[in-house]
Figure 1 (cartoon, one colour):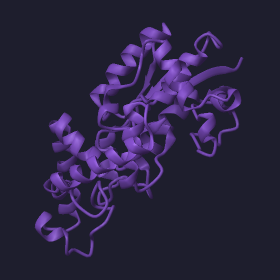
Figure 2 (spheres, helix red, strand yellow; figure 1 turned 90 degrees about the vertical axis):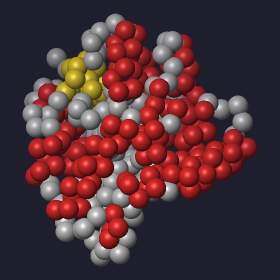
Figure 3 (spheres, helix red, strand yellow; figure 1 turned 45 degrees about the vertical axis):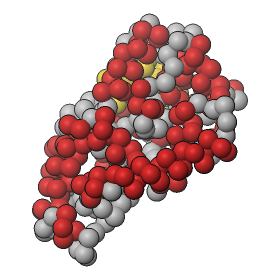
Length: 279
């Protein structure tokens, strides 16, 4: 018998897909790969989604947490070039949970972004389906599904456009400022991790970082500067962000705030995120 599974990241697309498939596949198993470093808003949203689905969402945790792998990879933070957080804290727990059973995995790539790639396993026992692509459901369709279910968008869409860990290296500059404002304790944790890497790499600190030959994504969460340097530029970053918001609002009227925010933050974007985390 083939197991039917649907992964949920805590973002709007995967949540909408879970709701969309609820009645189509009654025996669907829903799962969430929990790194232990997710935003509080994500955990609250999952609880609301479970009520809508009428069944629990299985939390998949790595046998070893982020701190363990941080020690293993000491000297290099996870980055777009080395996504060990995704591989070890999300993909490995999922494939361990599935094992050798035959599985159909439903992935929330939308019809208007069919060129994107979600998690597609190389394991021969896992078949991947893309219901939104097959059924022509786009961004507007996703929002309708959430609205009809009374779920709406996760709270973090007020300041951030992606789900994922609080220290996610795909965050834009303005989103790091948002983290510092909304969750100062989590921002401090991210700073502490970064400073530990800098210290082990022999970088004296923020004062010396700008002139260091070691400057780069290997040692900092955000490209080209430490988080304390970034926060020191708060006014500049948020001024540019507000200007981007105004430009985005002029270009696209009558669209959800989250969509305007995404357009504005794209000005500061650096790479395409892994959809395993961000759908």
